[in-house]
Length: 221
Image (cartoon, rainbow, N blue to C red; front, side, top):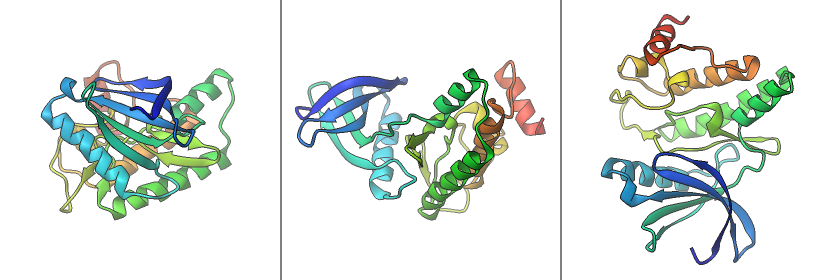
């Protein structure tokens, strides 16, 4: 941590916080995901380490670039240094255009779709299912779209993954909701939800309760 200077806060979750940082050695700006190990159960610690392994194994323009990882003994945290996408994420872009009462043009949506597919192909070729693909996890850097946030990704060793309830409800596929086995197509479902959201500024499936949402997704309503 001696070489890392915190500049700002980019987001906070149950077990982790993401900071905008500067490396004082190379004077470059990065994003740093800091996971306090004492606050999370062993299973979540494995997920954090899994994210590091996945990031370290991939080098592609449409995937957030991994830089380094280290344990900070002082506060017992796992720190993941990664590329900072300076134009935020798709959710921020959607919110901005919605407030401005403007539409994202069709050619831009096609461009985003194609770039996300390029990124997904890299993951799927490596037998990785992202499992939490959503507009908040698709980052923008100039004209380049980058998939990030791999903390619940799954590296599969067979045709189907054992069912588990994970991911973000609005983007989760019917198989996940129904707790059935699923495969790479669950990411394609989530991608469809993202494209719908880019066009209409809302997820395709809504519900007043989780049960309502579940029923609407299963019905395709």
